[in-house]
Amino acid sequence: MPFHYSTDFRRRACERLNAGEPVSKLAKELSVSSATLFRWKKQVLIDIGQIAGVKSYEVDELARAQRTIRDLESELELVKAASALFNGEVPANPKGGSRLLKP
Image (cartoon, rainbow, N blue to C red; front, side):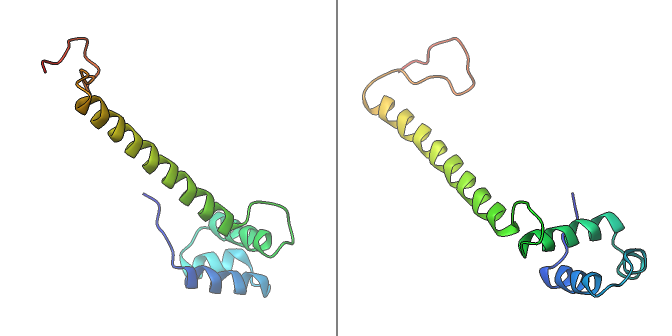
């Protein structure tokens, strides 16, 4: 599982990188890989509009929308199953078996 650094920690590291501190020195001092620092710096440049790319806050909105869609699809499946049960239809076996369930 990846380690998550605090937003404040990332912001301070990026400020130091933008001030001209060498990545290798900062990576040793903060115990963060240089690749991670380069990725953070690139994301900051995208967020402020200096280079093209997906802004970090847009990714959050997309993830939230996808989560909502997933939740609504699950809820719809439950409603369909409940509707079939109340209409007297034989519900499908949730494990996908071929035998019919006894009413």
